[in-house]
Amino acid sequence: MRYKIPDPYHPMLLPLLISAEDALARLDERTNRHVVEDGFRERGHFFDAAAALWVAGELVHVEDLVLHDAHMDARAPTHELTIAHSVIRARRRIWLGEPHWALSAHGLAAIRGEQVAPANARDTSAETRQLEPTSSATDSDRIEADEEEDANPMAAEFAAIDAAIARSQQLLEAHDKDVLEVAERAAQVTAQEPMGQLGLLFDEDWDEDARIDEWRHVVATADQLPASLGAALLFDAWEQIEPLRRQHWLGSLLLGAYLRSRGKVTSHLLTFNAGQKVVRHERRRSQDPVTRWSAFLEAMTVTADLGLKELDRLSLAKTQMEMRIRDRRSNSSLPALIELVLSRPIVSAALVAQHVGVTPRGALNLVRELGIREMTGRGRYRGWGVL
Image 1: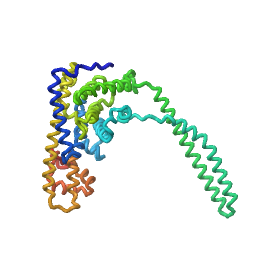
Image 2: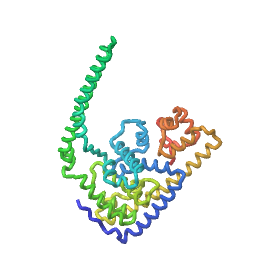
Image 3: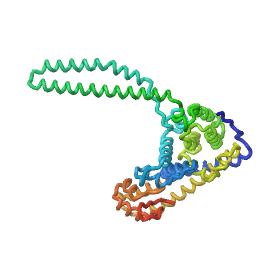
Image 4: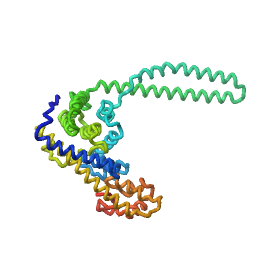
């Protein structure tokens, strides 16, 4: 489909644009100089992943997401939980890459999970087949030369061992060739299949690559606008074009990558989905583009305000916990626990024990000494965190 770019300088958008630009600038400036910058960034991954599923109509508990990320699931992970963890992994990968990497063709392919086979794969396999007879002949000549040179009584035993090794090597090489041929045939069959994996579930005419290219063409237009307005254009284009069928949540992550590449928010990857939860669904999915852009800019301002409040809470919690560990010995485990609590929305006794390197009983003692608030209200499978 062809995306029609509306008027970005509509009079209704200018006040919201000024508010969003100011809020994002304040958030980025404060986060860059804050003592809990790393913890704030890491906690944002979890909150944004849960909010992304909430915007899509699914519910994922943050405590389950934290335990699943640490491979400590209390129960079998659900499909929604697996998707939320995919959001976390994608956010971390985008953050670790260069600012412009996620918006490039190679970056989008990597985030989508596409793997392009090397072009010289078949050439390499052909060369391997051509070199096999030569190598086998060389091995046999070497064995015969050794038999002629060795006149000791153990020559026959050594020759038998060498022959067994040669036969084993031939079997392994034949197995590798079979595996390579099966992989090549599977790749050919996959390339011949229609784009829709199941005709009853997917549209065979849905060309994801063409839609991705169309969306990337909008980036050039967005670069000519202010950063917040350009992000609004890219996000609205993503919502209307719908490039991906199974990874629609990727649009909000690319929004944070775009703001980072423009130098607007460089301290962290913006948790835009947390702000989207505040805006009503009717405004976010309205037929009027001005209404959608207004909702987007409002969500961006709300996201920045929530980030500033989160920084205040984390700063206060860090100050209170550091007051409790004054005059402690230098090898105390409490500072490591403080870093863990500030970087996770919720922690369990097993998670503390694994991160700090103590027993579960010792983890409970450390939590008690810090005075962290218990968040579940349960007697078993408890969790602690900063509210």
